[in-house]
Length: 236
Image 1 (tube, rainbow, N blue to C red):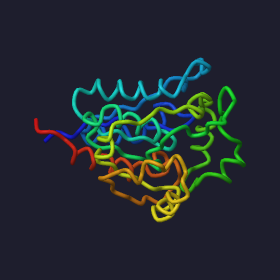
Image 2: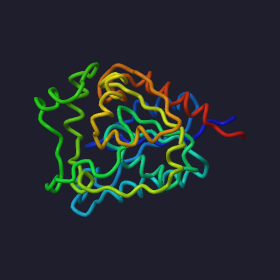
Image 3: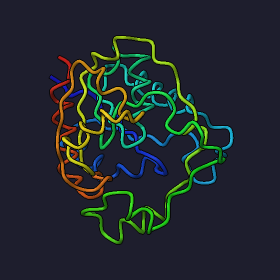
Image 4: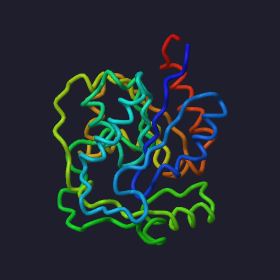
């Protein structure tokens, strides 16, 4: 049995480069992994015309191009776009992995009015996110390469209409906060967690580390995703 191909989608401010350490480990293990840079997230790219739907389309195109059902791994805020892709083509996703993420519904921040959202300051980042295990060099590289997020991706969303999205096998890897805290937060009604109660086939995994486990624990994250891809593979 061949492992399912893996598509990796980074969160805000990041391009495909954010997954380099994980891709290298997956490929060394003989698996196929492709990381995406979504529209508006390349340096010097025009972000003013990029919409949430463009991100959904870009991920969907990558899934369709694989030719067989894939393991789709989405990080952080990309849970919104990942879940929208599951709504569009549930039969093309063998497994959906939420990396410190969750199936979001609606718009993340309907009131966000700015053209884009730059990476927050060092002080804000330390106050708002779990940075456990990240080196100063990694944080400096993050800041050097970060690209502002197109504003429309925060204030826009898409309507989800396909009930089959709920049956896509899903794994939620909790890194910044333990799964018990995330489960408690579901009851508070956050939009980024709104799809969790809908899922019919969900597995929870705790991987205590930073919000960016692709840098702080690439070995563990690659192993988790690789094992899921091996289990979701197809007969040759």
